[in-house]
Image 1 (tube, one colour):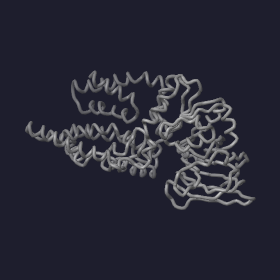
Image 2: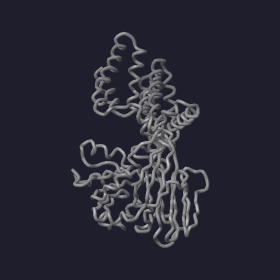
Image 3: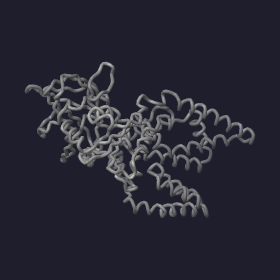
Image 4: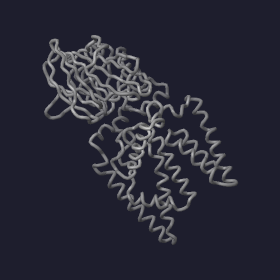
Length: 457
């Protein structure tokens, strides 16, 4: 009982893929009898008591994430249920297809993949005895619930992590069907060797690591964080792709947090920025604007030290950023039109229309620009009193198109979406024949502060 209580308590202190496993001892109460039933109930009760300090200290809201960012709302309409069916199918395919999951921090594409032999043995072993079959299948199904409701476009091998032990136990059950001890041992060795060879060869193959794998470089992020002076003499702002890395610093009461649009104003008093690999194009931009000595590189990640006087000079240029969600409107400033999950420190009601609007005046020489964005952006170019609109052709998720600009052109970029998607992934580069992604140099764009409340680019 002590081992079970400790294990379940640790799972409750984990996040949702671990917490759902509380259903197993509850199922044990239903399946067991006599003393075992009492022990299963005691494990559940003791684990929940051990979880109470966390609930009291964090204002624990078990469904808040799925209400704001996930797919909980899809349970209540027919179209939503159909979408969940598709999502469930993709999550099941992730166990059989190596590249069917997302590639992100803490998650690799082949992480959830199981060799065909392993899947076959798991199915056979899970049907050996009805009580064991019920326990394995209920546990496996329960671990899928948080992953399916997370709202992700692709399955995450990290969110499916709690499902893997059930598959291993089921596969071991199939090997246990071999009656003779000696033959069973050799069967276990043969299966382990075959699965290991297939797993290792797949993990180190090109199909496992996509072209954007350099954006998820944990070593670079770790090196950057270790370079920070603690406690920091000035506030430290980390780009959104740092994710969980900022939490230990915030929990320790240090002035380290994730960057929002609102935080750019803090740089007027001097801050240290930490930008992850997703934000690599900003490194050369800031080196040109503030000096190479202000940028310390850690691979594609980099640290930026901004003294107050230099930022005030930088602030003369950039883009005006207007954000609206439902009836609320927010305004901000960006040094250049580049955003990877950057957001205002606000939230939106589920399903509310979201609009991002960036405005600037091109003050550099004539050039050709390339806009890249997730979604369907449009660009309005006002030149000598004439207005021209440019948009991408096609219906792909990642849009990209080019357009020409001249000195004095007023540019307005608009991207629309729907809550809970309140962040934008967009970038404006100088179009180059070699395909290199170079941001327009500092002093090429001045923030356009003219009102566009009634505009519709």
